[in-house]
Length: 178
Image 1 (cartoon, rainbow, N blue to C red):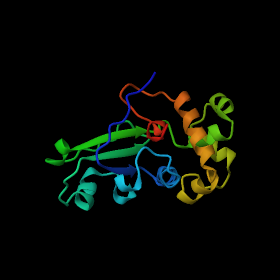
Image 2: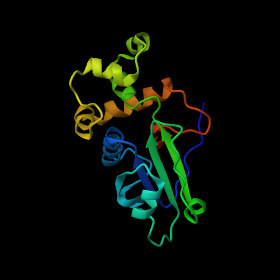
Image 3: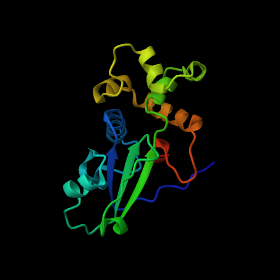
Image 4: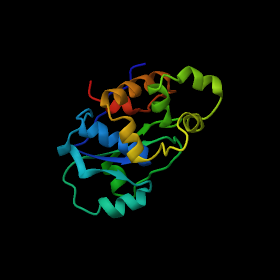
């Protein structure tokens, strides 16, 4: 099923749920693989912030003479992020869902998807079994593991095919340049 192409504002705020998501977005951004550029990035950084209230206090207390799109990269479909007035009417929010977990990129890159499905384990549990004593969610580990950006992009493409992408949802693939 072909999804609707993302319609971004003049500026893009990328908010990531955790260290692994932040590392992935930083790597894709640095490699020029995303549909937005450095000039488009709000506050010149990938942001880690889960609360709409904290985001408003830290980043939205400036006059905006441009259209802002917030891209939230997270694994939960249930996490609320509601901006207060007047921001809720002026800022678009796009959720990029990595459900069930970001570790699926690692499982796919390792060529272990079929074994994982047979295991009945959660992706994080399966990855802990594969990489004992590794902090798989740390920015440092993810950046080292996916140091070849083409491996990361290929894993994102494969992940999109095996994910349950619901109508109206977006995945990391939607953020990649064609």
